[in-house]
Length: 555
Image (cartoon, rainbow, N blue to C red; front, top):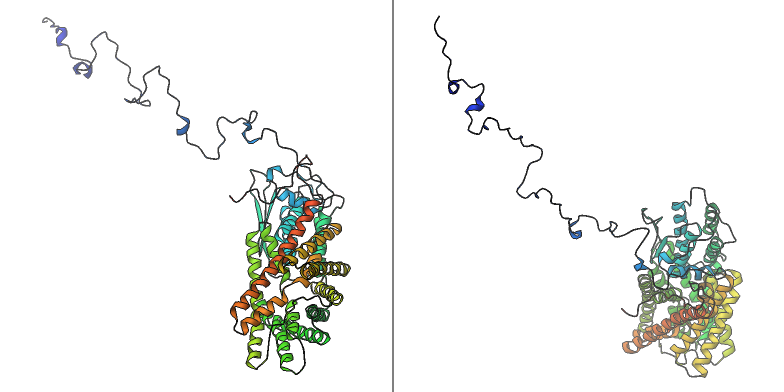
């Protein structure tokens, strides 16, 4: 047996391929741990032991409505609280609801007091859709009846507040009513609106709506939603207090009284009354055919002008201007004019502009109707000359009775309640006496005398409305009837028809100035009553002045 050859150690075969790798660790050296694949390293990574820097506040992503990081509900910053604190709001309960609601509407939402007594409601809370619907329906009746935008908003706020919806914001324009209720700062607001399609003059219905609002807002009277809806349906179904033939007769008597007021006799009275009744029937015919109100005024203005031209062509010695003037008194939209100026003075400029534009269209309709007849009369050879002595006090007793009769007939045309007719008649007589004393005895300019008389009418009307917790319109609108610029309007139109444009525009400008004096005087008289009578101040301190509608001074 031959010898066994043992290979040298360096000649032994390796057990694996690691011996042939240039990166293999030498014998006796522990191999390094393999790197973790889930944690890759970067040259921008921080060294071990270094804490990361906090990101600046400006670079943090967030919402503009997010709560600031420095805010704490236990230690809220007092930057929104004045140094003297926020006084508690306490409103007097014996004031009319119009004043209380108007005072709260002029406050910020956060300063309004919560309702102390809420009308009967279900356990689940107030029925928000039904309350908003009732509020809009009542506001629609008030706005369609000629009420001012501020009083409509006050009534809407009174209703919603009485049924527990204190965070409400009503908005009134000429044809649109809207109200928004926000339950809280985190809940979605609820908004409802209603459009006023038809307008009518019915102060009887207006007074009934005011009584309903007063009962709802009265803390001693409980009116449920069902009861309020039932009474509102009865108000809508109520018949007018006067039949149609009575309205036509009242329009004729109004025109006759106006003709006597400017110096007419019995024949002029009869002619003006007959022509006004014919114009009223003609306007009703046009309305039944669906024609717009503009054409109704054109038709109503033509019979008085035609009667005046016919009397001028006749051999009778009659003041034709008095006949035409009396017919114009029944057509001049004094109610809409007063409401428009009142809305403008109280800050509702959109509604005021719309109302005044409506007045402008109606006056243009009167102008068109009268001018067509006057042009025809001049072509036929009628001698139409402007008479003098406007509102001359030659018969003060007769003219006083005529002024009171004019106010009475105007009240009937406005569908007023029968127990308020004699009050507005006396108010109209007082206004005419004041105008006669100032304009004819004291030689005060007609515009200033008219403004003073209208201011007194507005003051008395506001006081009567406060005494009866009703609207002031039934006590004011008919009382300003004797002060309407019927003669100045007619003489302006006559001058234009004769070709004297300068004199016509001057007379029409005087008529416009008189109309604005009436509207501003009525509003000023109402504000004077609020200035001196007790009105809720809005704070604990009795010396705190009443909040105005605006706080700016032109900027």
